[in-house]
Image 1: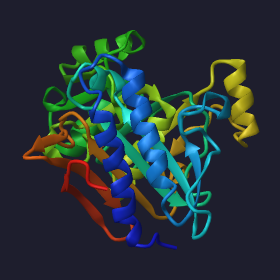
Image 2: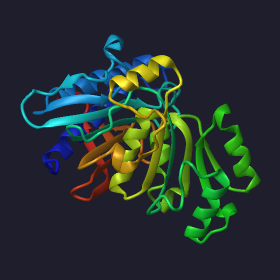
Image 3: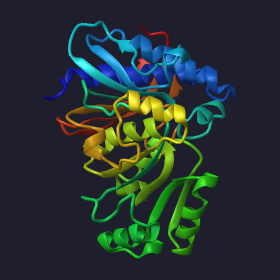
Image 4: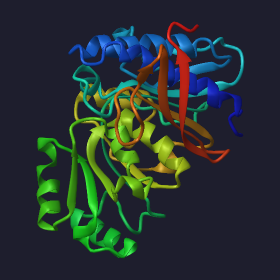
Length: 316
């Protein structure tokens, strides 16, 4: 079944209000305050929606409240049962230090249609390709790049790879440099990093590497609407993570997940800019008016666009 079109504006408002709340702390060097403002605003908006909502991808467990925790119930408890994935402030450091790319992100699907996973790392790969014959987590970096170059009718040195700039990626980065692939190194924000493969205007051909598992699920829900390829493999390294995964019903801890196993059915995804990045513009205030920019997708309706919105300051 498809999600009702009315939810587009409702969830657009959720990410927008979270972004506006967080914007009050941009550049104030306190990422916790910026994050909490986004969380509180997001929770407040979600609780106004006629739904039986449940957080399946959130910020930790119940004992870490007031974050939007995994298993938290949201909404008026009347209406459809929905799974919710949230990252109220993607790029906490970006917001704290007024750097580009801070977002407020939410994805929604019908009950049991979003992968339910604990907060852990995920090895992931995405590109605008039709299948796993071209790129695959189990291929070497060299094979992925050569296959992608062949598919796009480009030379490897004309491809651009986006990857988090982390010591854990040294071998991958070294291999890409050897192949003369152009690098786009990002410091945080791997939801937006993964989404840069959706359109040629971003000039990113492949996203790869290890980042947050929740961010992987959020990115997958948007990539699904763009018919892009995504794979992820959760990395359960600590015993506690393995136990939590098994309690959530994950039997094979080494399983490689395809996009249609992470996200099934219809989804709505919203990412509102807090500080300007490549996907969306940040919040602007002009003449007592707040201007926001949100990337919104709705799989069943084919909606994939940026929506600019305005609201008066102190509007209710």
